[in-house]
Length: 131
Image (cartoon, rainbow, N blue to C red):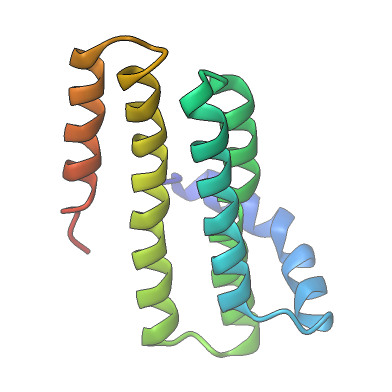
């Protein structure tokens, strides 16, 4: 969770980008879906190969979509229960991909069943975060 100062900074920086996407006809839900797909791709392509740096770079780039989609919905005046549900559900899917990618690495090339078990525990724990 970003603290209030970081959130304010990124909101100021990303608002023009969100406005551009709106002008281009992109929906907030599409940004949510694309962001989740990017996080999943970064985690499930790079992490199982032990490419943690590049996986984290890709994931970080797509994580910002989580700020952009909400910004777009507010600009459009279309914040909805559906959008909030979609966003929170896909956040859990993205988290699962990250921990799943790490577990695959530790089960294979990372050769550590203990760390594999820890990542699976983290995956399961992350799914029960309440809102």
